[in-house]
Image 1 (cartoon, rainbow, N blue to C red):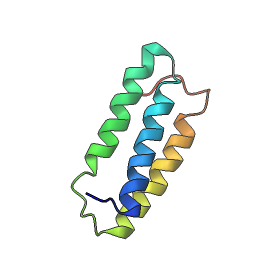
Image 2: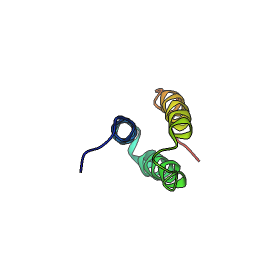
Image 3: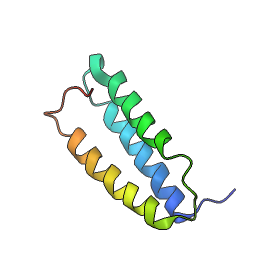
Image 4: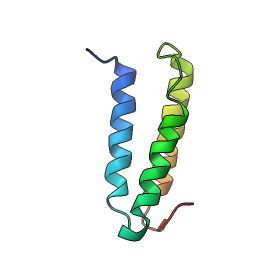
Length: 77
């Protein structure tokens, strides 16, 4: 199965989130992993042809990743 460009972007963002989780302190790493997974699962039912919503969520996800990946953020609720 070939993936569209947007699908590749979503997978790349997910992989980036997982990589960033590994950089967090071990005690809170699981919190970051669960948060990332839940954010992606919340939107799993979006139609793959709803480009506007997907692009919006990609932008939102990248901004969140930028904030949470900063070294000052040690844990997430």
